[in-house]
Length: 447
Image 1 (cartoon, rainbow, N blue to C red):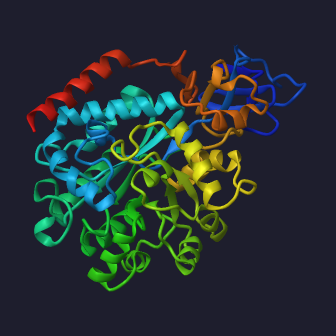
Image 2: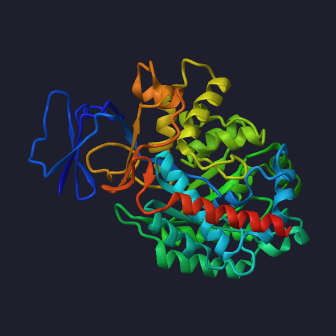
Image 3: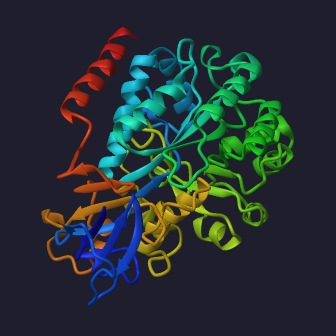
């Protein structure tokens, strides 16, 4: 079926003023101003109420943290004390049942904000949660999003001088064996893949050098991406200098990670030489503006990283340091903090869109999503300007960010509607809110 998405208010694509034609889940044609589709269409969708942007791509999250949003033990803390307060709680909170609900809620929340592809950095493995990646694969299919299953890991606990409790880490052999299993089962490198896999040791202070190196070898063998936290805080830099006698980027290179396979979460505290080295190697950086502000971690050097050659993407980060899963809101925060970092003239709304779409797609190693262009997958987010916040807005694309859009009216993934009239097609949000809320409440009461 050829579907003409017709006459939007505005669309983030040149030469598509009258919309686009979708065929077999792919963008087949851009319809320029004053034109009609070149070939007959089987149907039309009147987009006269909508501003259309490429489906947003979230490149860093921690779905399980939806269970502990605004937790009284963790608010008003920076990263290390925040983690120390929450790790023992997560060790007891995260079970297969609660993890499934947390994943479903985070995916749904992301999709309702206009996100069509998500990567979740899951590294927490208390006993009983060995099938975490299988649960996430099932929930991504249920909700309707594309997903990079980011098989995280920790093997350096408190008894070894690391930060996490002993009960949430695994040994190296167990981790690598499950990485092999997950890659064999879910890693799809074909165009339009719904599931791909990345290997993601958590951070320098929770994994061993051996695990970092073995993960890099495995990624090369299976042609998948690598992901980890790096350069998030001054404390992390100090830890690396004390533990490894080098800075985090030096450690990354020593472990075989300074390659275009890698994308990093946060990437804040890099000096000029490190920015140059990361860019030269085409290492991606996921900018997490909301989390960085909540935890007072610092400001990512987005402009310098992009100029050096690094893809820069966008992520909401964990729902206990954000504390939501709204990627459209993250675009506004990215615009604001980067204007504060640089200036108002050289950081525009188009930069924020680029980070959340094309830049994020590059971080995940995907060239089939992230833009409204012929041959790309028909992953689209539709926003209306009906709310009071948009009244008087002159530039519709700028208005979505500057006026604070936070909820898509419609979302399409691969040509299939996944959100209509602001609600997910396959998820009962009222029921999900009740079930997830009850799970979180029971957990809090048991502490």
